Image 1 (cartoon, rainbow, N blue to C red):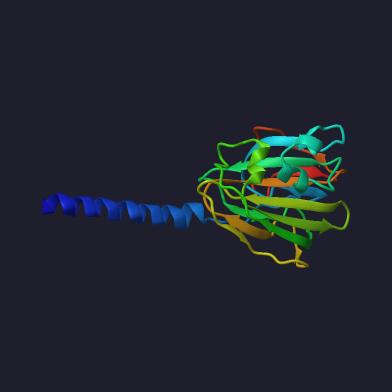
Image 2 (cartoon, rainbow, N blue to C red; image 1 turned 180 degrees about the horizontal axis):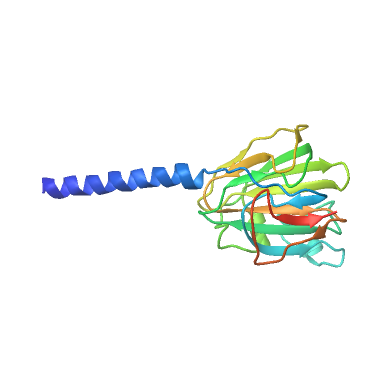
Length: 207
């Protein structure tokens, strides 16, 4: 009996050590990106693009879509919202899609639906943190950090009125989650649904 108990304890210890190693060297990795040059907007997160919403005035979602969606894109008519799904293997740090000044940070308590499986705009009803950057040429750009069923800790590393450079770290979300990028009118998209993007490296749009 004691031998089986000892055997079970050893398995638990080994699994715990493996989890810590994964957490430290895989999940918490944050390698410096190869930042592209030019008038570009880069990916704020690493993952798969699962949705691109054109924010034209004729889009019925602007009037009848989820309340959190309509609130999040207010003022971005003519632009786009891009949903990026992160799984446990992706880098979970978020970076500034462009340089600028942090004009606002809005944290909202919400639900904890599974952000990995829920690929609809309803995911915006989850707990979220919205970081708005004011760019001198294109205006406001928004990054939305979305928590999920497992990812219940959103970290924001910047403050209001702080000036950031393109690809500077904005924050981090633990475990699987989503990040939305809201772009203003005048930014020409360079990505498509189903594409994998790399944080701080993939060009999302040009201006």
